[in-house]
Image: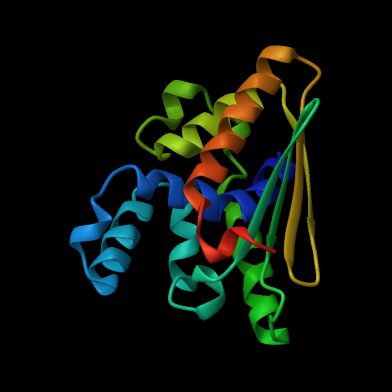
Length: 177
């Protein structure tokens, strides 16, 4: 379970952004309105709400992301290469907060998580319940996560999640490292 929570570090940003990106028409909002709406949406998810205290920080919106499919899963890289010591501390604090938030999820059923997790976090929960394994490492610039499975059906679900993350960041400066 600890790995699931740490995995949330990198995926939380992705998860929360994916959940939010699918819901609101962003082009009709000012950046301030978008941030307010995103915070409101994140507050509804037990995992995503851990990001709210960090969303105003420059690194949060400027993280660089890479997602790579592997034969048996996916690799997620989240980095802010110019992070100061304080920024890196905050990035790691956010990851820890997400780990803490997810501590009880492993014991919950899918029904028990309904209404407590956004759609993307529900998908992540499902992949982990299907037996996916993950390992996350806090790095000098952010985090790296490896999510794998020996079950081809679970690998396919991991790839779908990875595709959604890539699509979300397509064309943004954050995608390029």
